[in-house]
Amino acid sequence: MVENLNKNLIPFAIIIAALIIAGAIVWATMIYIKGIEKPGRVLEEAGPAAVIQPEEPEKIPPTGEPSLEAFAKCLSQRGMKFYGAFWCHWCNKQKELFGEAAQYLPYIECSDKETGQLTSQCQKAGISGFPTWQLPDGEKSPGFRPLEKLAELSGCQL
Image 1 (cartoon, rainbow, N blue to C red):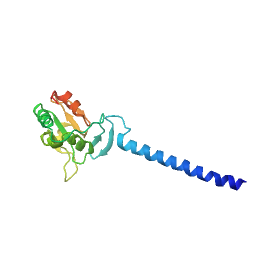
Image 2 (image 1 turned 60 degrees about the vertical axis):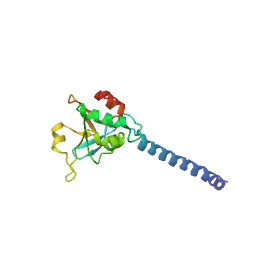
Image 3 (image 1 turned 30 degrees about the vertical axis):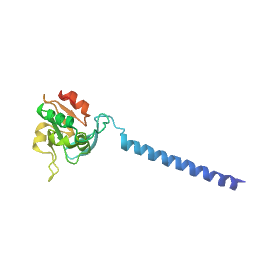
Image 4 (image 1 turned 180 degrees about the vertical axis):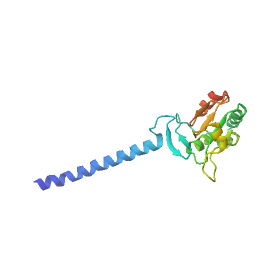
């Protein structure tokens, strides 16, 4: 009788194990996609600077919109500066928001491709994480910024 009981419990044990594994996979996927870290918290250290998690998720608009080109040019004209690094995931996501208009952004590369060190320009500017936006008044706004937030910070029309 005990043998029959053990044989009957095996399918239940398999089902429970499968549910636990499926739950772990879903949980890990949600962490990867959404992130659990608090906004603005340093996610990974990379040499002399850090990558900073975004404040909020952002939908990526279609590329090539004339308004994005005008917006990117306005950011430059207003004196905004976008400090980043070629290896920085969030810097690349920030550029993706602008699509083809990213070429007009006031972008400053902070990572020397040969040495991996922070460039002297970024050291002088006091940049310690990526991405970092510097406002016209010199104040720094670290982290990924949605287009609406950049419009608010710069006074540029989106």
